[in-house]
Image: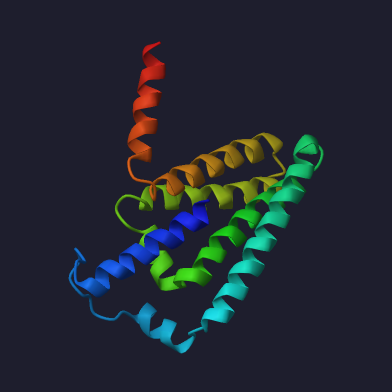
Length: 174
């Protein structure tokens, strides 16, 4: 669902740009844009990369779920598969829109905090499992990672964050 939504948002933005309804003035080409031209992929290659990356992400997340009941015994395996599953899923969207555009989108004003927390929590999950060996930290960073990913994804759905914020405020009153 999330990826279909991203694709539809991208298509709408392209249509607005073509028609001349874009709200942003044209920007100069950056170093990232120049690099993107050098490593351009065909549509077929992009779709193949997307399919392989999303497939690997789903497999890794499935393996993480199988290790979830035994996370106390094998936190390294769970943390590895959960985090790399998320990395593969994020990489899959980069195949569709390109790394430069994905990075710019991730650093927009409404998303940069969730992006930073997301990457920090992925690093924390791996560090706590591989070097610290702390099951408790693995669980905490995994929860933070999941929350940051959901918050980031909601930034693409109009009013989703506002609705969640209102709902959480309502729960505090009760």
